[in-house]
Length: 334
Ligand code: TYM
Image (cartoon, rainbow, N blue to C red; front, side, top):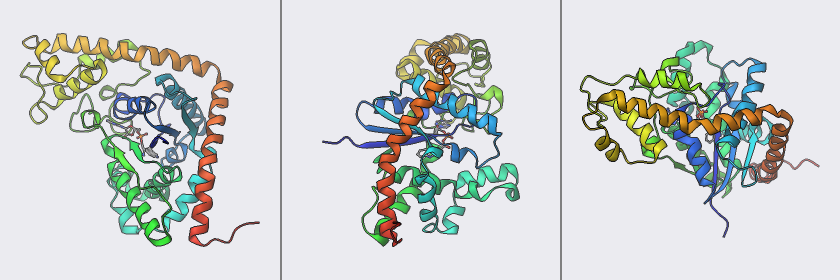
């Protein structure tokens, strides 16, 4: 029995992944290796939908890959590759773009948010078609499930719609994938503003914790995280969003239910709770920091792992693209 297949991607747009990326996605990527056929991609083509310095992009692509391996993605069990190494992603994007309504693409909330931030006229056509490239990523590999955070749900709905539309118009071709979103960690919020998600583009440096961050800095940020004046360690999404977010992070990293944490810190105030949480975060990320540094110290070995990953990915992507060309009616190239 072949295992169901998982595909997911992450952008190389920062010098480290953050806590939201880790809890919302990466951790599930690691555990899914036990039960699924897993394919993970560093999506550099998505990264250039916003301006990137070439040297930064190159460095961050390696840093991203190193963090994936350091987190526990095993290159013998998973396919790990860089998106631009497999040209079929862009080719399928074109075909899917021709099936996507202009109005349909205009409704994507992430595009609207990102475009509004830079001024609507500054947004590129690439940013507009970003979700179609994401659909191509997923559909090329016949993925059954896509582990992501809540912010990607709408993009996955578009992916499903496009798969169904293509299948309906041209005959069964694509697997229609489903989201794999864990509600407890689907939206880790900003430490300074719990009304927004923790995000490399929207959060202030104080609101975001990086996986590769210095322990001292992590401690400072957690101690200063916004809470409320009640002083009680208790989860309440509406009344206590800051404390609830901290409880979620603690619970996920320590593997303890929120109710157990509420009980342990009953009557002890926020200080002791935050101090322990800082320890859990720092301790949790220490091995990953160390392993990332080691992997980055040997760039050619890392590049070799990615070359092997790209070759394996292409073996799957090429036949899908052949199928698509045939279904659409393109004359075979001799
Ligand atoms: P990206 O690079 O912005 O984020 C990577 C993953 O982290 C999740 N995430 C969060 N989860 C919980 N709380 C948060 N505060 C938080 N912030 C980020 C994201 O949901 C994501 O799962 N479009 C994607 C990359 C992509 C992709 C794909 C994903 C490209 N092609 C194909 C899946 C399948 C993105 O920008 O992720």
